[in-house]
Image (tube, rainbow, N blue to C red; front, side):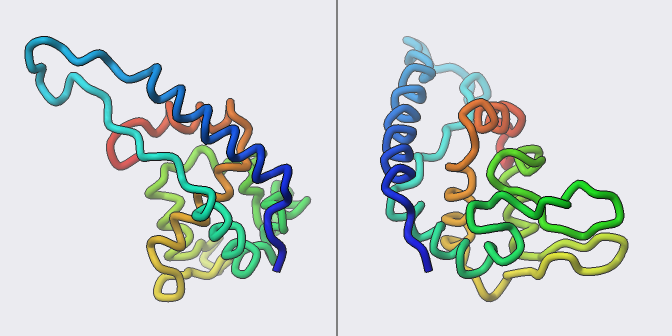
Amino acid sequence: MKSLPLWLLAGLGLWLAGCDRERTERTPPVPSTPAPATAFPAIEPAPPSLAALNHGARLFQEHCAQCHGPEAQGHPDWETPGVVAAPPLNGTGNDWKRSRAELVAVILNGATRDGAWVMPGWNGRLSDAEVNDIIAWFQALWPPDVYSQWQRAHAAPGG
C-alpha cells in the first residue's frame, strides 16, 4: 500500500488553504433584515482534512486502484466502444458530470452496462465515512477548473 507522495500532500494543503479563502470571499454579507431562507445559497461543506484525504487514498488503493488505476487515471480504453474498462476518476474523464449523490450511489450499488455488472457495489463493505473519504481523495486530484465546474453544475441541495 502506497502513501501519498509529499508533493501531493503539499499541493493538497495549498489547495485546501485556497478553498478556505475562496469560500470566505464568496460568503454573502449578512443583511440588516432577515431574508427568506431561499435567498442564500446552500452552505458548502468544509474541505476534507488531510487525514481524510490520506485515508481516502489508502482505501482507493485497496478497493479501487485495480480497475481505476493507482492515480485514478482509469483504463486507457475506457472510451473505446464495446470495451468495458474503468473510467478515470482524476478529473480527466466524465466523473465530474455526476452529482455527489450519484457518485455515492455508484460506489455503494455498483454499475451495470447492457445488463452486465461492470463495477461491484461496496454497500456493506465500506462505511459512509469511507465512501466520503474516497470521493474527497479523487476529487482532490481534479484540476481546479474541473472542480469549479462540478461545484457550479451541482450547486443545488442534494447535488
